[in-house]
Image 1 (cartoon, rainbow, N blue to C red):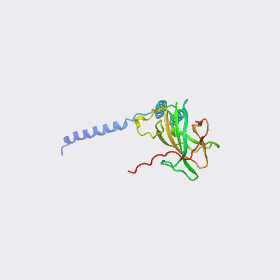
Image 2 (image 1 turned 90 degrees about the horizontal axis):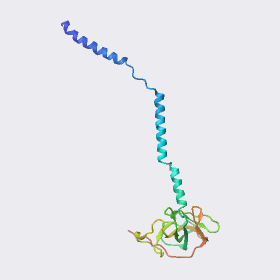
Image 3 (image 1 turned 90 degrees about the vertical axis):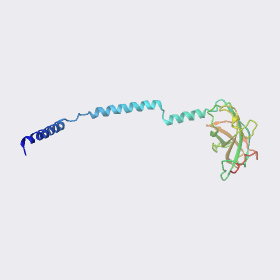
Image 4 (image 1 turned 120 degrees about the vertical axis):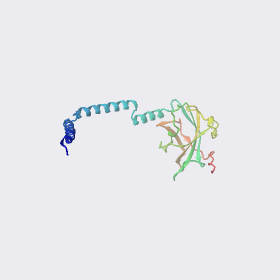
Length: 203
């Protein structure tokens, strides 16, 4: 083998080795971790503060909704047209010692925030509550079942409804409460009978 042929190859290997050593000697830049962490924390806190300002916490939203519903009656009033022991169709079932009671009521002067689900039936004597969330049926002003949704009252307009509750069998007088406010000027008497909702037709 001729030595003059080895020289270029050796020179090339030395150049590659030298370049590799130079790259290893160059240390990576040093990052100030404390400064970076501080900046990141500040940025995160700023983002959280901005987000909190734009979107109130859930409990604040719920409290605002409750306050709005609680004042939903406004300067309005509730009139009971009739109440009776109920034996017809209902989504509710009477528990032992109780019966279903139907309350035909008209609400006027309320705001759109008024929630019929929040009307409680109360023992007229003891003032014990027997719950809210009645079975609700919207009626016409003449007391018939509303079948045409186009004729449904707009939110806040006078509305007549049939409210069905579970109530003790032996209690004959009641009143209605809404968010702690008595809706009626005097206790109402439960009559022995009245009209009933039709049972749904089998499909």
